[in-house]
Image 1 (cartoon, rainbow, N blue to C red):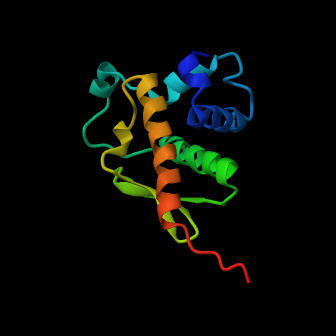
Image 2 (cartoon, rainbow, N blue to C red; image 1 turned 60 degrees about the vertical axis):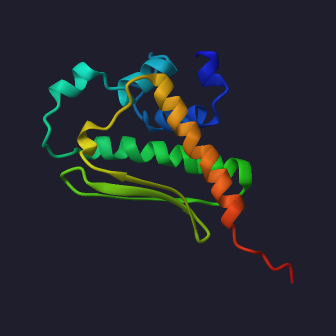
Length: 150
């Protein structure tokens, strides 16, 4: 694993999620980077093979949701505050995913053409995920509910 991955809290959590989802050990021989690349990286050539209009499959919906679950779990680890991930997606790939805690929306991502979802490089995945995580800390600090200590 590269230094860029090791220092990234989001990436560590995403790898934990992927490894936990591998019930039969199909990916056990793949390195973490190979697995992330297989699941989340789509090159220009890959995108050319995917039709502009198509239905999204349940496996891809689960992989997209996994990205936001990684943000939520890492947020919980750092703050001790529970989060929920809510995702609504039409069969055509239009939808939204939110990460919420208390009454605060930490991440709100809208999708169109989600069947074409992916990142061009692993670095883009690492960067985007960490950005979601850091922004969620900022948003929570700004809007967290006042707790009365009575």
